[in-house]
Structure formats: C-alpha cells, structure tokens
Length: 156
Image (cartoon, rainbow, N blue to C red; front, side, top):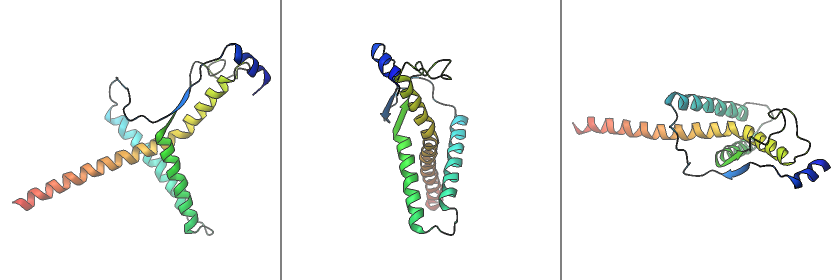
C-alpha cells in the first residue's frame, strides 16, 4: 500500500467486492445449465480430484501414513473452504486498461485483485466439490434404481 493509494482513496473510495459464505438458495432467476455443461464440469472436477489424490498417494520412499493423513486433511479443508466460500471481486474497479495496469491511486483496486486471486485459487476446489456432490447424488440414485429393479424380480 503506497501513500498515494492511502491519500487518494479517502477522497473517492472505489467499490470493493466481497467474500461471502455459500448461500443455500441461490437467487438465480435464469435458465438452468445444460446437461452437457454439467457433465463437462463434473469430468473436469474428477480430473482435478484424481490429480490431487495421485499427488497425495504417490509413493515416495520417505512418506509414511502420517504424512498421507496430513495431506488428506489439507485437501479436505481446501475442498470444503472452496465449496463454502465465494469470492466475488468488483469488475468495475480492477485497474486501468481492463486490469492490465495497476491504479496507483486506489487501494480498493488492490483488494479487488486479491479477491480475483482468491477466486482463481478456489476454482479447482469448487469443481472438485461439485463433482463429488454430483457423484454422490448419482450413485444414490443408481443404487435406488438397482434395488428397485432387483425387488421387482424377487416379487415374481
């Protein structure tokens, strides 16, 4: 934070984005996403999850069970934090030339850049959490369909 940012921001404060906890009921009034988009996002999330599990369980000679458990705990904390926290920067206050040049007179622009960084860092965790939740829901539905199918044959 420079002295210029501190002085000029007090005269004309800029809008700042926010970090909020995930809301249960989104206020989306738009159309629901298409099925192919949900499948693509789920596959990308499963790819990221597989990559993270590979990095966690990759055999190295000095790794022990405690190290693997600590890595799994960090991974689960990251995925839960990514799922529950939403960082939304204010796009109108991201610097000069659409964010390519730092505005030396606004500290709020630096906060928005930090929120954009958090949004980018949390995106893989959001995809992993989404794919795990969708996978859980699909497996429950598949288990119910299989149990109903076997129940009809037992009843005959």
